[in-house]
Image 1 (cartoon, helix red, strand yellow):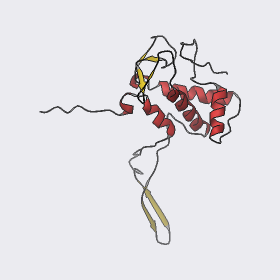
Image 2: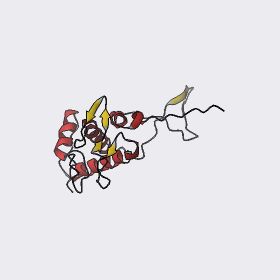
Image 3: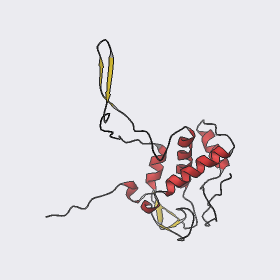
Image 4: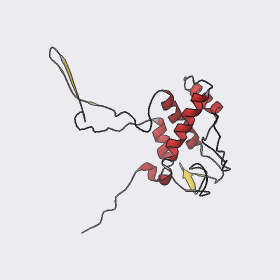
Length: 167
């Protein structure tokens, strides 16, 4: 399986924003070794599918209704810089590679494990640790570089607002 890279020209069958070679180089710059094989391609494809799942919340609009991926887009401004409708923003490429590295490290990005924070610890002959949300299944937030990059190209950085209406 080889990835087909979207370069901004609406490539038929595109399934990635970056090449395997770029991903391997990115990983190496962070001290992580990614093998030059089909597993790297699978990680990239899953990461791009995750990013594209947020398409409705992204800044701008698709350039073509039938394009295979969420980018390229019109009217894209990220971190105060305008991106042309035939470009893939660098933040998208970095985001995909960051999520691919999480997948490489065994994280299920579609269903991440909740982060548990100790609410109480007790040591009296035995150790007892109680976590927030232990009984109720509460998920506490999990932040990563990939999440920060993703939020950089979502409308309102992924935050939602509620309009207050006076009664």
